[in-house]
View 1: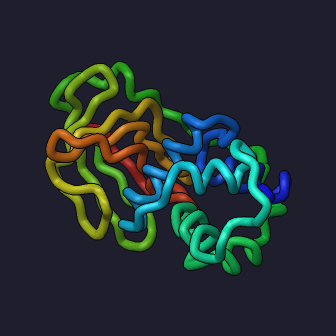
View 2 (view 1 turned 90 degrees about the vertical axis):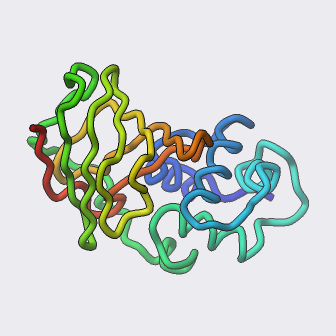
Length: 182
């Protein structure tokens, strides 16, 4: 049994990508491992999202890992969250990062008390030069295309010590509180 379609759509919105193919589910499993430190099989995610058929629903452990990947303490907290304000109009200023010159520094912050500085390597690639209270680490190589205040910031790929870590989303709930390019 797969998750309810409304729940799947909420998860996709918060995850920042679709979960409709085997590749999507594999990526999500890697994201979960990267963010929680817990191993989860891509097949488990495929069953939860209906890519592989199953006679039973996802376990509490699986649901809790999915919720933790989305920034919640557990599944109950995710389900209890008021998602009725998921859509809104705003006057955000989106900054494209693809043309940021090499050696420029992007500094950004998000709740609670997280600060990151990254130096541009050109072509939307950055190296983390400072990380305070974040899962990103100094020396991580990241790819990012755009940033905006009050919106989550997705690093579409993070490489650490030559190993692909998956994507990383900063500010999942409250977005980026501030950023500067210098």
